[in-house]
Each structure stands twice: as C-alpha cells, then as structure tokens.
Image (cartoon, rainbow, N blue to C red):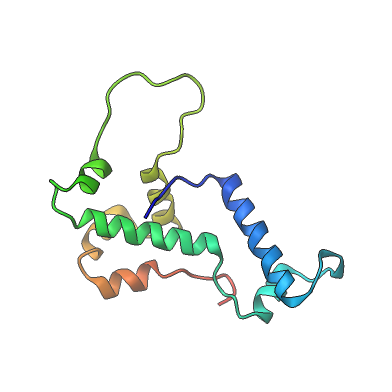
Length: 133
C-alpha cells in the first residue's frame, strides 16, 4: 500500500468527486438542488471516502506501530532526518495526518498506544463515523 499526506484541498476534491459519482447514480444534477445529505441518505452512503481514508491511515499506523523496531516500515515511521529544510511552507508529514485523525476521533496518542494492542477496541474506536448517524 502506498500512503501519502492528504491536504485539505485534496480532501475537498475527493468529496466533490464522490458527490458527483453519487449524484450520477441517482441521475440527479446540481440543478435539481438536492442537498448532499439527502443524496447520501437516499443511497444509504453513511461514510465519505475521506472518512474511510482516515480509518485506513489509522489502521496502517496501528499495524506499523506494533512491528518490531528493526523492520523497515517501523524505522521509517520513527526516523528523523537531520539537515536544513527549504524556506516557505513546510510539507505536511504523514504523522501529522495521523495526529489530526486521532484528534478528530477524540483519541489521545497515549490512549491510542494502549488501545492498539486490543484489536476489537481499536476497530470500534477508529471505525469511520458518519454525521448522518
């Protein structure tokens, strides 16, 4: 699997594309002025693609965090590269995305480190939630 950092503009584009696909399934256009929540409710589409991406990112974080420290993915997760970075806005790091996802799930990092060893509790805590529920 390949994981990358998703910025807010990327999330917005994914949500727009997803709504376009859902509207096409219903044969509804934007001119029909049907709200996004109504389109999702009609198709019983409770979670968005962005929610699923966040869930998968957290599951991958759990998987890599449980690895032995000599494995390459675990080394890459916890590595630090020294040196000087370019001027300007710094690129978003993958770990920053994971921390944002944890904050959105109201899951402190310390609690996550304990929960990751219990699969059922982790899946329940990290499961993609929906505003429609």
